[in-house]
Image (cartoon, rainbow, N blue to C red; front, side, top):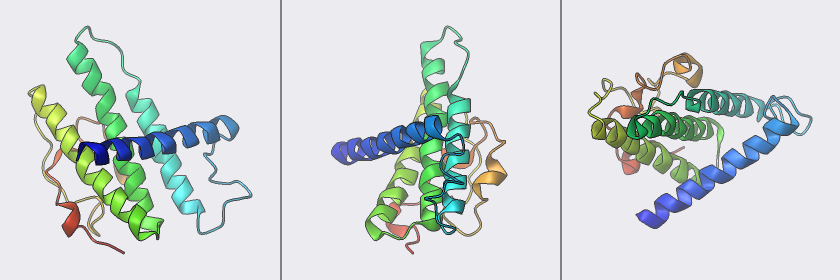
Length: 164
């Protein structure tokens, strides 16, 4: 489990680094570049929005409470991973990457819940898994703060999440 988590973290880091390089090159995160196909544009746009929100939400003013400051930065980081994975699940086709994205959603939701519980913070109300049809698209929750996001709800196991 720990090795898989590290592999997921490595994959996320690679995505973040690739996104950072793309951001440095093009502020649209590739959403309108010549190399993007018309079918790829919605994914790139959604992924860029997730990354922009994550980076903005991770910029917190230090409070003097290391535990609170750490979680204030890590929760949006984990939510960004969830949002990017959900974007991939909406558009991606590779069955192995889809499974990895589903695992990222579940594991990151669990870690957000664990961080909130460790600080005695309440969990937000339960909501549909972000890959279920009833789940709101990324743009609908992009204005929520990380303290009210649905990621703290207990997720369904990866084995029961829908596969394309």
